Length: 416
Image 1 (cartoon, rainbow, N blue to C red):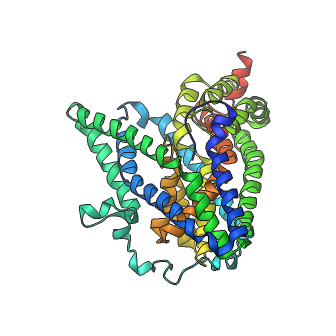
Image 2: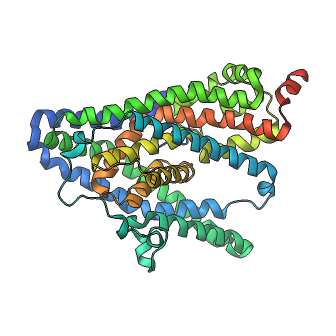
Image 3: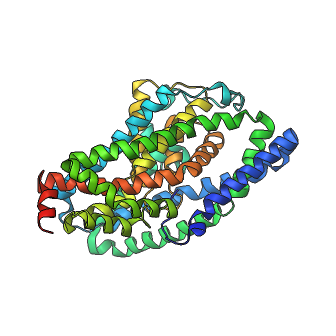
């Protein structure tokens, strides 16, 4: 859900504040007017339908243009492989931590049970074979939000094919770039109606199903914030220690203050990149490492987003009264969160793409699952950005430890 442009505090938080205001006003309307508030539900339906319509072309052009613009360089060398492995390591660890937390503090499914309609059941596993999950058997079917994973894979193929075409594919690459920019603006325009749309949705939910919805959302949010704070303090210290002992831990916490404040103030990993680069320089991380890890990590390395996607999925399972604790579901959740942490980078409100991916993979009814995921995503965005941005700093420290050796920080300080 991150925006990619720095600005004043109120400017950067305006979209979140407007969404929260819309939800609060809608909740009050639901409490006051009860079932009489049902007449404003079409406003929420219109917003969701616009979002569903824009997602398909946005996914195609965003992913395809990103791949098509990759530079053929030494990124496949040792340094790039190390960076990729570190990114995957921390994202997977963060996902496992939040899964364990959600197991330890399970959500009461009865709090959501009243929201279900008779026809809103999960698809059975027999109706979603692996082949149909990753591919479709006709082109028009790929242009459906019900086949999001197949759409993502096809978009990747378009991007790589454009890249392989080289000079002959330049015109098509420019078309992808231009289309990507247009679709970003389309999504931005749609999201301007989000406070009204989500407000109307929440008014309907509270009016029809009662104020117990507040408690239903409060528990997963409390678990998420608690785990994120512990992860930030404990695991980032562990990562720093792994990269260079106690000296590295002290160096990290001494130099990450500005980056942390910037992340909270902007709600954007991209906007925090200059502060991260400055922090990495103060930590004596070699330029050739920090100048690769941090710009690359800003869009595709997101520990906080990884954790929030798990919480969203768990809440969706709770809404439909399903247990998420079987091994296959847990592994698939971690797989989805890896994709989410990569796909949403650089896309305004790109987290919605990940949410729709999760909804389609598990066969949830979109009209009920997506608003719940959007509400959670909006409320967790600040601390998720804090973890996303600081994760790039500790990742650069860990990469330095592997590439430069265990005494890198001692050598750098001796050279001061």
